[in-house]
Amino acid sequence: MHLCPLCHCKETTAYFTDNVRDYLQCSRCSLVFVHPEQRLDARQEKAFYDLHENNPEDMGYRQFLSRVCTPLVERLSPQSQGLDFGCGPGPTLSVMLEEAGHKVALYDIFFHPDKESLQHTYDFMTATEVIEHLHDPHQVWQQWLNLVKPNGWIGLMTKMVKNVEAFAGWHYKNDLTHVVFFSRETFQFLAERDKLELEFIGNDVILLRKAQ
Image 1 (cartoon, rainbow, N blue to C red):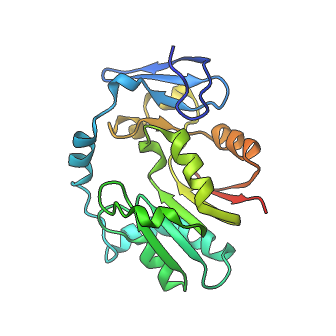
Image 2 (cartoon, rainbow, N blue to C red):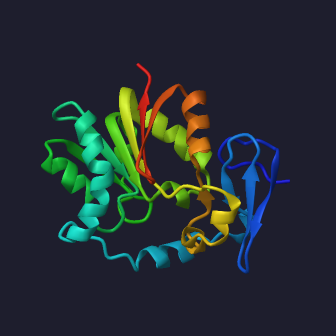
Image 3 (spheres, one colour):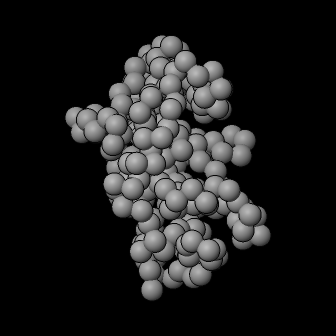
């Protein structure tokens, strides 16, 4: 028996197994997650992240991030203050948001471990290609809710689970740092539970607005 790491439901069932890992699914929030004993440790994760070479001059990376940046900017008040959570070694979304007139603080457990930035509240926060890496998504999700002011926005990017047939051939699960996999149903569960407005943009952008 393994508790769901997101909603702590006790009812989880086998979802899929490949040559490397076993995946379970929560019966309540639909989260798919890797068996806890098969996750990488922090040292192994950091070594993997050190291979990333993202930077603000990479126009392809900017185009990728524009999928969340553009719709978020359309919804923000002028000169909003935000936090890019999990900004990585080459913060880029923050640069794009600042170019649009907003102020953005940075936090990353490995590359920008500035805990002072977690002591404030913001008009918005972003986490792009972050949520699938979380070993304790329950704790981090609660942290995100507390970081955002009433009426504030949470902008996320992550690939989402569709069904077990698609999951079987899904490249996204093969990244060993990816340990939790959300679906539209998972975000709908969170939005209803936590009284958030929810909007899906395309296949991998999720915008949530905190209640007033």
